[in-house]
Image (cartoon, rainbow, N blue to C red; front, side):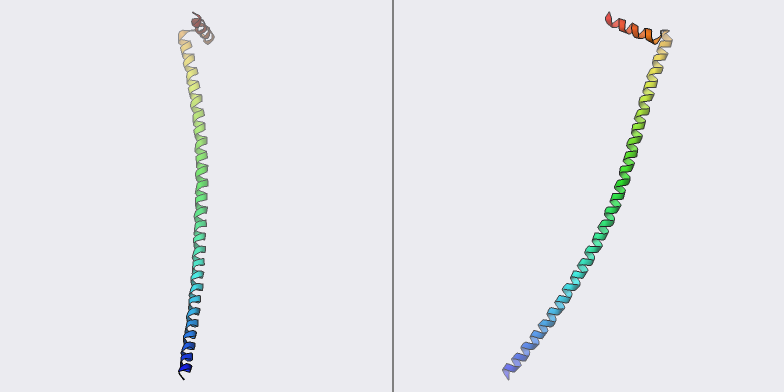
Length: 114
């Protein structure tokens, strides 16, 4: 009778272990599913952040290009203003001196020979 009782107790322990093992498997499956869902959500969030950053980078690059273009126009305008100013100063100097520009150039060339 002791052997039968021992066998029954062992069977109960085995059944309890099987049930516990099944519970653990269910918990693991649930954990894996939650982990996969979180990973998917994080990946989607990262993709949104990447798209936002790409868009902002594109806008920044476009703005930078516009600024570079504007700077080039301003530099060109400044060069033209400087050239115009120098030309007006030459004309004014020639007018005051009463000497045409081509004579003044010859005079300067001659002064270097002396």
